[in-house]
Image (cartoon, rainbow, N blue to C red; front, side, top):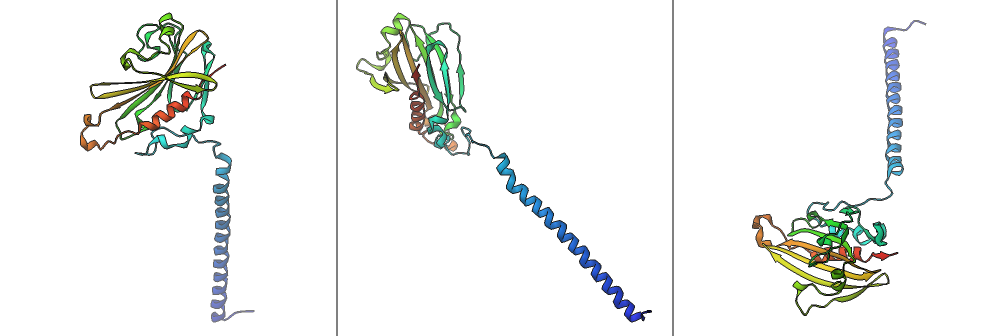
Length: 249
């Protein structure tokens, strides 16, 4: 049947409209499946690759103190190590610099303020300045040392000579063992060093677990630095928690 010109134009327009509908529908169909696939990927990816634990980085978070991170108060998540033949173990956060397995050679720096009586330093942990940023905190160092030297044994549970004749130690029980705790401090060239020393006689040796917190006087810095006084109580709390994990096998 031959169509008139008017009817033919209507027929062609209808075919063209139908084609546009089909093409548009095809785009919508493809777009739907692409969107569906993308949606599934976004949902599934975290389930497949989500880490089982997230450890903090000290000093992270701009000016916020890393000392506020809960990880540092949960000793069950820390690294636990035994120290050579001393049969002693201690736990600590894994994101601090440590040194272990020192040479067996005797040295005088196995503990702070020890005058005479060499010993062996078996462990060192350092908390960096970034732990309390924008402050006068420089660092804090914890050491574990031991000595069977006669002088070291005689002076093990005595206050150091530079802390005054009236200084006394405080007994503290840690995992069934009684340590004696001493405190001392020193100032030099605008630097302040506060030391807390835990000591115990065990198996014929004097053991010392101690830490020194190093800060600077705020007057050392220009005012435009806008530094604040460091909350060293948080450093002390962390160090005491570390020492509180000490055990003898």
